[in-house]
Length: 345
Ligand SMILES: Cc1cc2nc3c(=O)[nH]c(=O)nc-3n(C[C@H](O)[C@H](O)[C@H](O)COP(=O)(O)O)c2cc1C
Image (cartoon, rainbow, N blue to C red; front, side, top):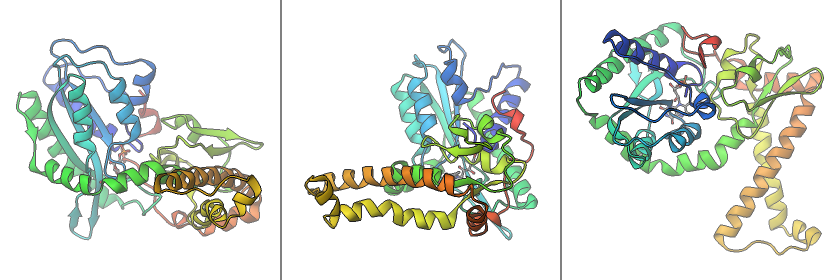
C-alpha cells in the first residue's frame, strides 16, 4: 500500500535488488490484490508486505489484505513499514511504526507464513494535512539514507538471514503503550479526518483525485462536479498531494466547527432534550454511553459534512474555509520520482 509513493519507491528498490540477483520480482498493489487475489505461494516464493504507518500501526487496507491473502504453508515472508522520517536543521528524527510491523507479522504467522524479518524505514513524512511537506534538500537526505538501509535489510533476507532488529522491538513496546491512540484513530480520527477534506475554488472538476484514489472512495458529485470524501477515506494523502491545481485542502477551521457540531447531539441527549422528543430513556452505563455517543457523533459528522459540501459551493464560504485552513500555506509532498501513473502498474 502506498499513498504518496514512499512505500512504492521502497518496493521498487527491493524488486530491483531481487532482479539484479537474477530473481523474478512482482510489485502488487493491495487494492489490486483485492480484485485479483494473490496466487498460493509456491516453492521459492518470498512475500513482502510493505505499507505506510498510520497512527502507530498498520492501515486497515493492509490488515484486510493480509486477512484475505492465501495461506503461507511455510513460505517465507517479511514486513516493512515506511514511517515519518523528519529533518530539522541537521537533525534527522525517526518516525514510529509502533505495533504495525508485528501486528502484520502476527497475522501472517497465523496464516502459516514464516516471517523472516521486519523493518521500520524512515521516508519523508507525507501527512500534509497536519504539517507542511519537507523541502527538496531534506527529502533527498531522508530518502538517500533510507535506500541503503532497505537494501541491507533485503540483501540479508535474500541471503537467508533473519532480520528482527532491536529498533522494531522498541517500536513495538512504544506502540503497545500508544495503542489507545491507534484505537482512537481507528474509531474516530479516521472518520473525522475524511470529513475535513474539501476542494477549493481552484478545483476544475477534472476528477483526477477520484480516479487516482487507491481505494475508490472519492466520488465526483453535483454540477459542476466536485469531489466528495466518503467514510472509507484512509487519509493516505494522495488526492491532496497530487492535485495539479493544489485545490485539495484539509479544513482546519471547519474541523474546529465540526468538533462542536459532533458533540451537539450527545449534549442534547444528556440535557434530556432528545429524550423528550423521542421518548427514549437517556443512556446509562459506560459502554452504552460510549456507543450512543459514538453513533451520534458519526451521524452528526455525516450530516454536517453533507451540509458543508453544499455550503462550500457558495464562493464566499469556500474562500472563508480555504483561507482559514493551515494547509493553504503548507508545501505538498509526494515521493519526488513518483508520478500518478506509477501507482497500480
Ligand atoms: C494519516 C497518517 C498517519 C500517519 N501516522 C504515522 C505514524 O503514526 N508514525 C509514523 O512514523 N508515520 C506516520 N505517518 C507518515 C507515513 O507513514 C509516512 O510518511 C509514509 O512513508 C508514507 O508512505 P506512502 O507515501 O507510501 O503512503 C502517517 C501519515 C498519515 C497520512
